[in-house]
Image (cartoon, rainbow, N blue to C red):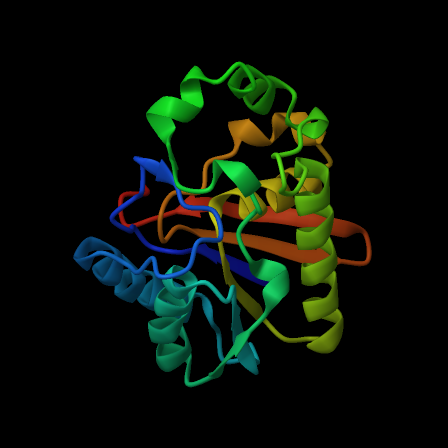
Length: 202
């Protein structure tokens, strides 16, 4: 079983596209969300679950979200570059308001599989990277519960893949700040158990 956690809220959440820019930390709200996410993840574990490590994107906001999770589980925190945010190249730091005015915005929303950010990744490359990373982590920890802290786009793309849906459907998946998503992998393939669980979830 793979437990995916999106990082908590930052000062730019809902305002800018931070991409992989360094130096972006959780806000006070984000830190509280991270603690709440840690409690939710810890509650998922049963006596039979073995968790060796918590894996996280190298970006500060993901590391700061992963730290209380690792502490709650009594596990080591391991940085994994495969869980990093999508590389949005020249769009890094752009406001969402300005991005929405770009002619490419409709392509991103309706046909993301056909778009590559200038000097950055394509959505198909990002999805392939995320799928490959999770496959690698599962293979490295057979029979264990894998916890991975990442970002919205990679998590949404992974869920879409697990559902057997086309990448162009990924915009219909929600991954809110500090939300928990759970996918079970078996011989017959993945089963999506939970998507976007937060403190506000029913």
